[in-house]
Length: 311
Image 1 (cartoon, rainbow, N blue to C red):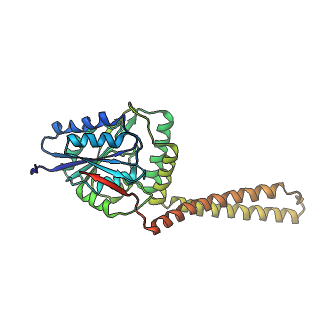
Image 2: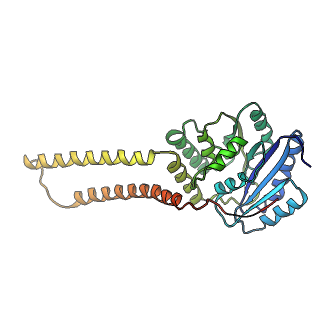
């Protein structure tokens, strides 16, 4: 039965989470006792899982009318799944959290307090991680480069656990951008924001599907979408290489004319040509990343396809 309470929606992307779901749903449902002044809405987005995730979600939905299940036609990626989930939320504020419980759902209580105080975006930023050194190193480098070359002020620990106002959700739904990072888009919108630090927990159940290739794609998407640094890098390297080549050529010509050196062999020439060709191929690769994304946007294909919404 409808009430006059504000609605708090929670979007959870699901991909091969059959082992997490029996733990995640009760955890989220327990938030009702911590937030008695809100009506909760749970939006689970099945991103093409081929395990029992969808069946478990539908079973939970049959017992809790607050649960909505969005089934995508195939795996589009977590960012697209979040975008799909945002389109069906009805909340006055919306939280985004992963299904693996590495992020503590009870932190939403503090985040809502900051939202009520006037922050349209509340970021749960990681002060530390219960993860391996290699994962920490990769994440630390990524977020450092994001702050340095893409979005100034980006949290050093990063975030993908966030709460946003319905106005922000509306703006995100109007942005039909593909191959992007939804978290970076939230930060880029520039609304007044606040942060809640926490320690990201170690994954206890299930296996992460966040592979190295997906991390690399997100890294490239983030910089191509929010930074001109790769193109500027190409310009600087091109100018520097041309300048050094000019100086070297001038050096060889002058010394050959005055007889200080003899021009012989092809080793040095081959080394220089190989180096320059390598630089050119790298630059063409960077240009190709931008061109492919331009082509992908020009096709105007959706970044996700919703097969069915169960509500």
